[in-house]
Structure formats: C-alpha cells, structure tokens
Length: 76
Ligand SMILES: [Zn+2]
Image (cartoon, rainbow, N blue to C red; front, side):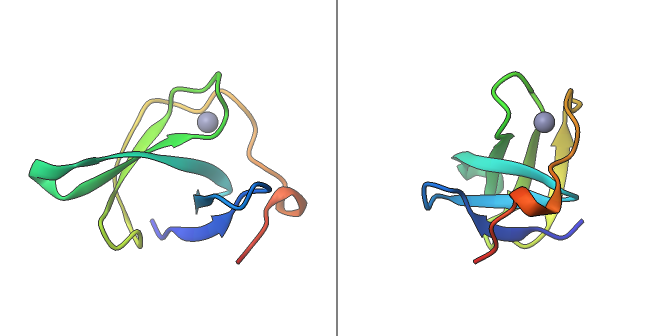
C-alpha cells in the first residue's frame, strides 16, 4: 500500500493510507521502521512504514471507525 503524506489542521505531518490517517509515534531502530498510529484516539490500529514514508510495510489492529471523507483531508 502506498502512503501519501498530508498535513493535519495543525500543520503536523500525517500519513494517509486508504483514507485512514496516521500520526507518527516513533521509530523502530532495529528494523529501520517508522511506527504510526491511527489519528482516532479510540482506535488502536497501527502501521509500520519504511524510513522514506512511502510504503506500508506492516499493519496491526483493526480500525473501529469509518474512513475519513475526502473533504476532511488536507493535502500538502
Ligand atoms: Zn483507525
């Protein structure tokens, strides 16, 4: 899956994947992966990308909310 980097309303970088938005929560140094968490606080879905933020390497957990509508997404 491809990642699109977008900006949140506060100007923070988010990853957009399949109309779900993720915020960066850390780096997994031993695997050279970035860890992202769904921007919905009640949702525990996470995903891992490469350091170039271009492709989803792995996902974990299920989303418990609907996808974002395209109007709510702010592209760079
Ligand atoms: Zn979610």
